[in-house]
Length: 275
Image 1 (cartoon, one colour):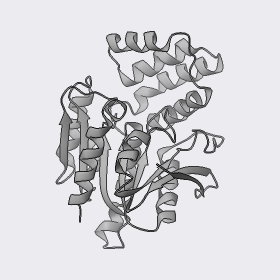
Image 2 (cartoon, one colour):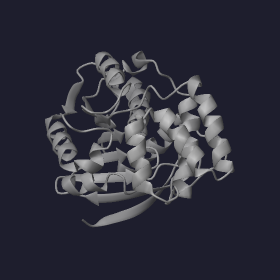
Image 3 (cartoon, helix red, strand yellow):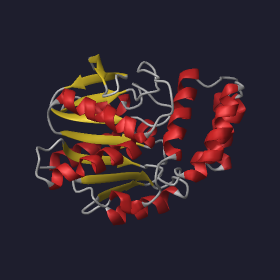
Image 4 (cartoon, one colour):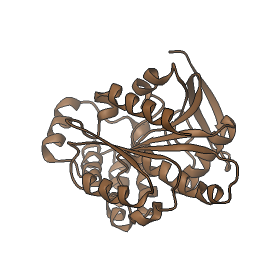
């Protein structure tokens, strides 16, 4: 799979690096926390024969810029809109985990334009397990603890905070620790997590926020992902009109890595069905 890395400037001058591959209708894939240009590669290589894939490294993640100051989802919405402007055609927008939360914000920001019958910028929206429960003022103490651990270069402290944010079950945490061994977290990803937590702290947990989204929407999830993700997905499914849903048995929050064929197949079928 041949790819090209492009540089795009956001509205505030932040430099974004975006990987482009494939040919066909454009698809933008937004990665989750701790990710980067590589996050969607396994899925992208399965779609590149039919679609043109655009995969930004979100602000705060190498090799995109890490701008100073506190990050908000408003900044990241502007980043995605800059990517859409560069593409210049209506896109299928896909997000995984935190990237799915960002995709929701982008779709909501564009909803008034859809209502006003302005030229379409989104053809569809596809979401994989946006952790809407991990947002709001309740995250602030965790953000403070994470910042302190990062400043102290305390890898275990950062790891513990992130598990509290994502509410990973103890058995899964133990498996992560065993697999990691003596490896330390990537410093660039650690900083990216910090800024994601900043944005989450200022975000909303109210599902009705997304009721204005009217583009065709697909919600994907693993049947084995732990609570409160299933309950959160049920609440989200109730508020977006006409939402379609796929739940994969035996899969969890890591399905884009463990079963990329399932994800690519679901996305391919969904995109083809969109007007």
